[in-house]
Amino acid sequence: MLNNLFPHLASTIILTGFNDTETGIIAVNSGAQDYLIKGQVDSEKLIKAIVYSYERNRLNEELKIQLEATRLAEEEIREKELQYQHLADSGTALVWTSGADKMCNYFNEPWLNFTGRTLEQELGSGWTDSVHPDDLGMCLKTYTDAFDKCEYFEMEYRLRNARGEFRWIIDLGALIITDQENLLAI
Image 1: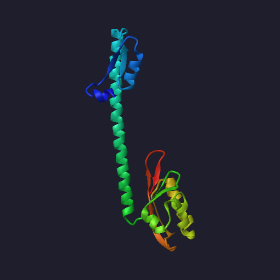
Image 2: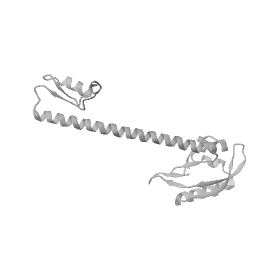
Image 3: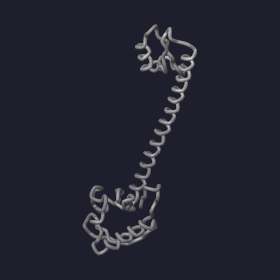
Image 4: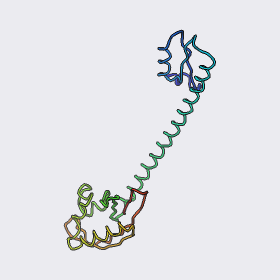
């Protein structure tokens, strides 16, 4: 509140009346950095109050800068996620990702449209329900071996489409290591 009334003041120190701690606390709760009680002020207390006020103000400004940087970074991440989502959904390629646990955590709209299944049905290992039974063993082995070795993979297998027909697809995958604990397979 005080900062709104006096925006040009970088720091505010209140001098209260004799034995008036309550007014000082109200002032601090309203935006003052510190308060001094009239009659108890000496040069040492005044210097401490000024230094504390300056330091508190400096830390508040640093925090504002960090919060703004965080907000901008989060905004940029949201924008890039939207761009990726649009890119992944605008083509005809069937795109999926998995986490370090090898479980699938994303399927794009073309994949879902092709299989006629929901995202919830495909997540984890649910996608394997649409793989032709004769191809499933090879498909899982190729994927897990490449994942374990952090290698590129390419495989062909039959995937059931929305009409219940199996169609041959070529699945290309590459492991992206984002950091020590996060692996992303595409």
